[in-house]
Image (cartoon, rainbow over all chains, first blue to last red; front, top):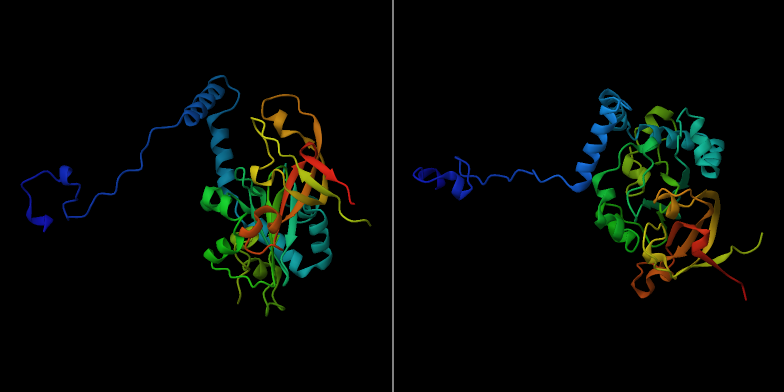
Length: 217
Length: 92
């Protein structure tokens, strides 16, 4: 047992006093672009162009964004067919009706039906409707998802736990340029009496990317 | 309404910042919708005064993109492509 060997250095055998291997620290050297970002940030502060507090406030605002606004949009589309029609026609204008300010966002909403399932990717980088869904999940930005979902979407969706029958057409949307995409999932059965707030709770981030469906009751 | 316009993505391979992905170059699809003019990212990326170019959504079948390797040839992929990357294919 490792516990019995107190006569040699634990640093050389890589084990903790209780005999477990140490997890390596994740420290690594900063990259060129991280260095550039720090240099630029310090210069902007030094020259009085922006303040450190403004940077912190902006970062906090970005972190605070969540998929809640997206879920609110989907829930409204479920209960209001006229709104859904406007959303599918011009997503950017339609979300203003719910008080969501699109900013630079140009939105296309695509609807899942019993015949069509939509899924969103950005193969070139990680374009994502942050105003509506907050920060993208790590897997959305990784090469594995980006390269595989355009070629084998059914396989990728099955790895997310979503098996689609052949009768459903898969539509992959690659956000290659200026548009951002919101998937409107199908409204689950048995939700007829629910109000918009309760319905929005059924709409996950993944359902709005298209790698999941809305939660069933 | 007529048939959707069929187009082929140019099989260009210039260096630099380009937003027409490699896997779509040389592939044939049809215009799904027009998105209007946008500043050309190929100029914008280098700090140039960018010209406005029409951006189009093009619909491809998975069969066209991946041939026999497609999971289901009738599945669809849609992407945004700038007009200068597209050649129209005239109906015969």
